[in-house]
Image (cartoon, rainbow, N blue to C red; front, side, top):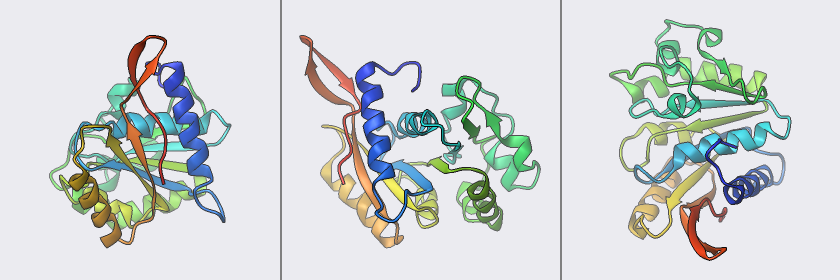
Length: 219
């Protein structure tokens, strides 16, 4: 898991990993989109820690930062972001130019966002994006995708219809129920498969104090 994760958080992400792997009866979903209704709910850290949990099982995993508006994954992992999704999708760089192996977990690879482009939604629904998905499906067992929030822009909606499943991250006690309902309606409209809702930042009584950690997966 990410270095900042506590033992409780790490166990919660392992539980999330198990739930994702068992979420579809026929086979585990290969491409999973992590999104939220609004900003600040923890979708990026959820995407990162889920990818790490899958990689720890020995699976080949690639993590895509498709939040081309407010990307954070390169910063969280301490890697370069001069090249990435935006430079590949505009034809400036090949896949091999933009994909980076995470040194602390050799089974985990990352394609960062790259420089913020003027047309994120158009890039994410382009033929180049479709081609990228095809190539990554051949190379990796799991593809985890971090996207912008559903209610902010259309980017996540575009991606949701192209993946095997979606996890909706919800900040416990903060995100209004109407926002969650609207987000689910957007996913339904895109014919996306909602694998479950991940309740994040839940305050639990533990050893005499209240902590905040990732707490479960609710289909």
